[in-house]
Image (cartoon, rainbow, N blue to C red; front, top):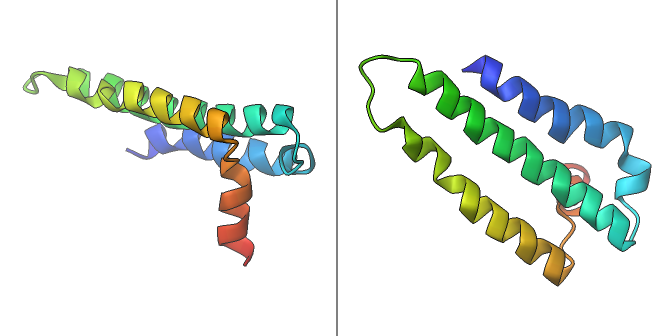
Length: 96
């Protein structure tokens, strides 16, 4: 579904680009903002995928599309604890 990818694209590319000067700092606030944006983008992606597939009448147990969200939250908390800025890693991947 392209419609599911659009909110992910909006948060992880467009808003990230607009806030790039803030996100690439080494402060804890930049870390929190960056990782929260990625958590939100992936959470929206999984939730909208669930909503789309749950409307198809012959599919059962579409709640399985929501199963990655708790693991995503655990990963989000771990990145905050260990100080891993996802945006810095993504920008290094893109431009190095």
